[in-house]
Amino acid sequence: MSSAAPTPPSRLPPPGQPAATPASKRLQMADIARLAGVSVSTVSRALAGSPLVNAETRARVAELARSLNYSINLGAQNLRLQKNRTVAVVIPYERGSRQHVSDPFFLSLVGSLADALTERGHDMLLSRVDAARLEEAAALHDSGRAAGLIIIGQWHHHDRLNALAARGLPLVVWGGQLPQQLYCSVGGDNLLGGRLATEHLIARGARRIGFIGDASLPEVWLRREGHWQALQAAGLPADPALELAAPFETNAARQSVQDWLRAHPELDGIFACSDLLAIQALQCLRQAGRRIPQELRVVGYDDLSLASYCEPPLSTVHQPVLEAGAALVQALMDQLDGHPSAARTLPVHLVQRASS
Image 1 (cartoon, one colour):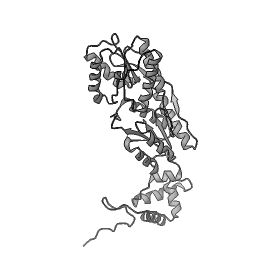
Image 2 (cartoon, helix red, strand yellow):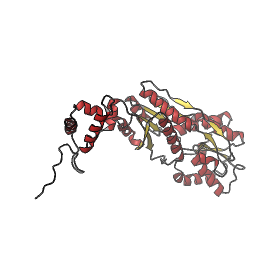
Image 3 (spheres, helix red, strand yellow):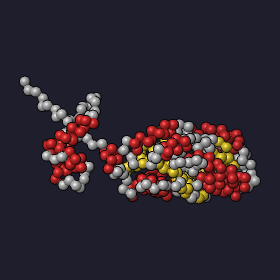
Image 4 (cartoon, one colour):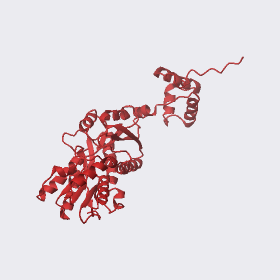
C-alpha cells in the first residue's frame, strides 16, 4: 500500500483550518534559511528585495519561499520599512443623502486623485465605509494597507473626523472648512459659489428664487449661506418655504422636487446645490410646461461634463476638480513627510449657459 507524501511542516494550512501563528511563521522563515544556507536575517532582507543581498541569493530564497507556500504580509512589511506607497481614498456611504459612488462628481474627483497619485508613484486603494462608522476607515492605516487616508465628504460626521485627526492619523478630507476643525480639509469655495449662483439669477431678473439641497450637510450649508448673502445684499427675503432639503440621489429626490415645484408656481429662479438636482428640476419643469429660461432660470453646482449637454445646457458653478486631486494629495504628502498641512479653499467660478 502506498502512502501520500508527507506535508512539509511549514506548508500553509488548507482552507477551513486555523491560519499559521507568529511562531509557525517564524519557523517557515527558519526553514527557508536552513535550506538556502543563509541566516534568517538574510532571508528577511531577500524577501524584502534588499540590495544588500545579491541577486542570486534573492532568487534562491524567493523560489524556496514559493515552494513552501510562504506568504508575506506586504502591508505590515511596508509599514515597518516605511515604504508604503498606497493611499486609501474613502467614500463614506451616508444613508440620509443616498449619494452613490457612481455619482458623476465622485467619479471625476476619484479620477483626479488617481492621476495625482500616479504622478507621484503611489497606488490608490478605493474603499467604501458607512459614514456612521467612519472610525472603521482607520483600520486601512492601522493594518498597514495604506500610508494615509483621503476621505471624500464630511457628511454629518465632523466630530468623527476630528476624532480620527486627534489620533494623529494622516488624513485629508474633501469638504468645507468648519469651526473647531482639527483635520485638514481641501474644498471649493462653497460660500462664494452659492453667492455667485444667486447673484447671477438676481442679475437676470429673478426675485422668487428657490434653493434645492440638504443644508444639514456642511458643503451644502455653506452654499446656502452664500445664497442668503446674495439675497440680503439685493434686499430680498430668504424665505424658508422656497427651500427644498432634497437628497443628492436624484431618483429619491424626483417626487419631492415635482411636489415642491407644483406648490410654488411663483418661482422665477432656482439654485440647486448639484448639477444632478438641477437637471432633475429642468426635467420636471419641462413636463409641467414651464419655459426655460423665459419663465424660470436654473443654476446648478459642480459643472459636470453632462451639464453642457442637457436641454437646455445648464448654467452652473464650476468646481476645480483637476486642481482638487493635486491639492488633496499634496496635503497628505506633507503630513506623511512630517509637516503640518493647512486647510485650503479652492476658487470657483460661474459658467453661464442657456438655462439662465
